[in-house]
Each structure stands twice: as C-alpha cells, then as structure tokens.
Image (cartoon, rainbow, N blue to C red):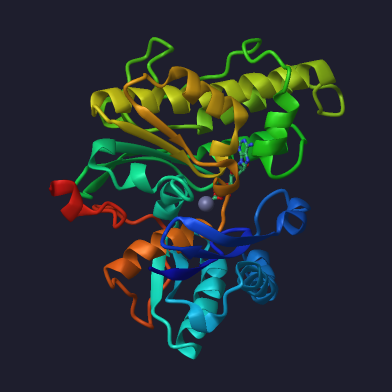
Length: 364
Ligand code: KG4
Ligand code: ZN
C-alpha cells in the first residue's frame, strides 16, 4: 500500500498528483504556462521558473483536495529532478524538499524520461508492466525534449539504443509551427492545421531511414534526426510564400500534413525496425508527441499482431505529475529514497536499469 504525492516542474507545466499503489490516480492537477510562453514563441526558462513558484502551492492544494488526502496521510513525496530546464527543475525540487522535510516524509527524485514511460501504464497497466511476458519492451519517448528508444529486458536491465542526434520530434513540430506562423506549442496546432490535408503532396526528407537510397551508417541505425526536415521546410516556405512571407491557405494545410507525415513516418519506421531487430514483445509510445492522432493511428495500423502496443493515454502524454507519483511507488516499495541534498540535472543520464520491473518476480 502506498500513497505518493508527485511534483513536476521540468518544463512549462506545474503539476501535482496523488497516486495510490502506483497506478490508481486519485488526482492529477496541471497548471499550464502556455499563455505566458506563447508570446515568446517558445519556453523561456527563467519565466518558467517564476511561474512555477507561484503555481506550485495552488496546484498542490488542488491535487490534495481533489484526492481527499492530507499531507499527513502520504507515504512519500516524489519529484522530478531531471532532465529538464534547470531553473524550472530547481523550483519544484526545492518545493518538494521543503514539503518532505516539513512533514517528515521520504523524498524520491524521479527521472522525467522514465516517468513518461511509466505514464503509459497508469490506471490499467499494472498487469502488463509487471508481467515477464511483456519483455523485452521497447519504449519510444517522444516529446519536446526527447526522441529516444529505451530497450528494457525482463530482469529490469535497460539500454538506450537510439536517440535524436539533433532536434527532438516535438521541437521539430514546434519550430515548424513557428516558421508557418501557427503559434505555440507547435504539435497540437500542426495537427489541427494538417487535418484533411494531403500528407503526400510534398515530400519532406526522412533522415537516417535509408528511404532516399542513402545507406544508414551503422552507428545511426536506431538514431533519429529532424534538423534536415526543418531546413527543408524553410526552403519550401521560401519557394511558395506570398509577398508577406506566409503560405496561402490551401498550401498551408498540405504543407503541415506533409511535414507531420515525414515526422510520423520516421518515428514509426525506426521504432518498428528496432522492435523487429530486438524481438520485443511490447512497444510503448509516450511523451507529448504521443498525443498526435496521426502517430497513434499509424502505430495502431503498423504494429505486428504478436507485439503488444501500449500508447500512453492522451492525458498522460504531456507533462503531468501522476506519472511521477506512479513511478515513485516502485522506489517506495524498495525503500529507494533520495538524500535530502539531492540535486537537479539538466541532461538525460545513461540509463542501465528501471525500477518498475519486478526483477525477482520476472526471474521466477
Ligand atoms: O512531454 P511534453 O509535455 O514536454 C516535454 O517533456 O518536452 O511534450 C511537449 C511536446 C511539444 O513539443 C508539443 O508540441 C508536443 O509535445 N505535442 C504534440 C501534440 N501535443 C503536444 N505533438 C504532436 N501532436 C500533438 N497533438
Ligand atoms: Zn516531458
């Protein structure tokens, strides 16, 4: 039995959540800062930190009230301590440290990347996540900050087999939306603009897939690259734009659809190739871009029947604290607590194991 409070502040959402026993989401409150950052066309770290500072307490109160839980009843405080924007992370981490110390609760530092993967199993995923027959498992984490493939085996050992060598897929969508003057954040607005458009009208490059007749260097077999598609869009806009620099409506829709198609095609193609090569039994797709309707549909259509597909529920794709509290349960179960002086980290460290696979059970 556990009741864990999760706190999340790694980017531009301030979130708090209460999760029971790792899966049952009693509450999940998220305060989005989109409006504050939209005027700048992207997330401003210093601004994000200030907004977290004012939003954290109300979000916490909301999460506790909605769950009907008091601080005294909690077993631990789990908090994202990286990777993410350093100023933003520090605000949430220090807030959580204060809460944990003040209420005499253990503190658990959580890796945001792993939390995204865990988020795909919230609510009804316990059986699947904890069954040895789900492994090897391949997770695609695709967000504004990450595009990476993590391979997890039944004994809990994990290995990042590929990641983007330049931009993340979400970043590629955000930058495209900015170039097309569609606003921020780019993913949702690109999806809306592309709806009903012809995704095959324009061909945007699919780097590192070998589809253009260019062999993929072996070291990049499972890596991604999205900077080329962004540059191709820039040339495309220069070619077709009106005198005022914007694309005519008909062209805009097909451009957004074709660009989105290129990003989705690369993500699905590479993930399925890796799934085949490593003979995985489960594919997990998580992170903000996993909200994308075209990406979800494509994975649904293309995943072979012998592989279980686990798409994170839309509400658990973008940043939230339920995924933080949920994975926190598995640390709590093993009494893996963080020192009070735990620091934040900006970049994704090398991952060698995950805590949510019950290694002992898997070996039985
Ligand atoms: O996971 P997340 O909230 O934050 C990070 O950890 O980065 O992901 C945010 C990213 C943004 O790049 C946003 O444009 C993208 O997720 N996103 C989408 C959609 N909704 C959010 N991308 C494509 N289609 C969507 N519907
Ligand atoms: Zn995230």
